[in-house]
Length: 436
Ligand code: NAD
Image (cartoon, rainbow, N blue to C red; front, side, top):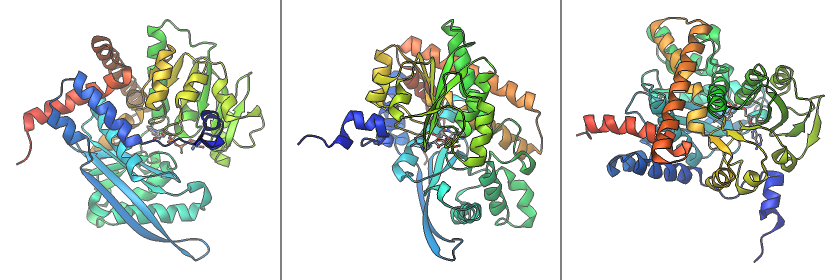
C-alpha cells in the first residue's frame, strides 16, 4: 500500500509531523555504541539501560470554571550513583513516559560529562501550558509537586525548568515543597529545585545558562575551524528560554538571526531580527506569532534557508533525513535535547555538516543549576561574573575532552560525549561494586 500524503517525507518536512520515533530506544542505541568505544563492562551498560525509578502520579486540579481535571505526572529517576537525581520538568502536550526516560538518561550523561556530583532525572505532565490560565498553571504545578512528595528533595531529586516551565514555576514548586516539610526545615530546603527566580534563592546567570553554554561550544568550534562568527548568520527553531538567549548572546558576537520558528510558525528576515526585541515580544505574547518584523514562511522553507548555523532549540526529532538533506548550514548546534534523529544525524555528517551534540552543547543549564544548588546549601550568592567564569571554564573543558576522545576513537562527537560520561560513571561502579 502506498503511503498517504501525510506519511510521505515531503509532508513530514512541511508539517513537522513526527514519523514514528522511539526516543528512548535511540538513546539506548547511543549508550551501547559509547559503551563499546569506552570499553565499559557490559553489566554497567545493562544497569544504565533502564532508569532506577519510574514514578507516575495522578492528581486532580480545580480549573477556573469550577470543573475538576485529572492530570498525570511523571518523574523518572534514571541514576543517582554520582549524586541526587537532577533534571527538568516539562509541560507539553506530547510528554510521554518513554520520552522522559530518554531525557532522564541524558541528564545522567550530562552531569557526568560536566563532572557534577549529580545524577539524572526528568519529569513532566502531558498538557498544553498555553491553554490554561496563570492561576491554573500554578495549581497544576503545586499539586504535582505535592503528589511527588518525598520522592524529591534537595538531597534526593532536584527538578528544574524545561520546556513549558520557567523560573516562576520553580518558585511555586519550591514554595509548595517548603510548606510540606515543617517550619523548622523550611529554609534548609530551598535547593529542592533550581532555576528559581533570583529573589527566591535562584542564581544569577541561570536563565541564560543553557543558551550561554551552547554559545561557548559554538565559539570553541569556530576557533577550531578558523571560522569567523562576526557577520555570520543563524536560524533558530524554538524561541523560548534556550533559543532566545542563544540568539541574544550570539548577536553580541556579530551573528545575525535571519529566521526563527516556534510552535505557531516560522519567520524570515534577511536583514536579521532584533533578538532582544523578539525575546521581549515572546515573553509577553508566549510565541513569535504576530511579531511585526519579518515575513511568514513555511517550515519547509525554514529548513531550506542558507545560513551558517542552525540551532534547534525546541524539541526532539525535528531533524530527520529530509530536514537534514534540506539544511544549508555549516553547523547544527543542539540547544534542544534529541533534535536530530539518528537518520538525520547520518545525513548531516555525510554532507560534512558538523553537529554539536545536545549532551555536550546544552549542559550549561544543569551546570549553573548545580551552582545554584551549591549556593543554596552554603547560603551564598555568587556574582554573575563568578557564575559566568565558572561556566565558561566548565564548558570549554568538556568541549575539549569530547573532541579529543572523538579524535582518538574516530567517533562522532555525540558518541564521544556519551563515552566521556560513561567512563566517569564506570570508574565509580568499579570502585563501589553492586550492593549487596
Ligand atoms: P521553552 O518552553 O522555553 O521553549 C520551547 C520553544 O519550543 C518555544 O519557542 C516553543 O514554541 C517551541 N516549540 C514547541 N513545540 C514546537 C514545535 N512542534 N515546533 C517548533 N517549535 C516548537 O523551553 P526551553 O527551556 O527553551 O527548552 C527547549 C529545549 O531545550 C528542550 O528540548 C529542552 O529539553 C532543552 N533544554 C532546556 C534547558 C533549560 O535550561 N531550559 C536545558 C537543557 C536543554
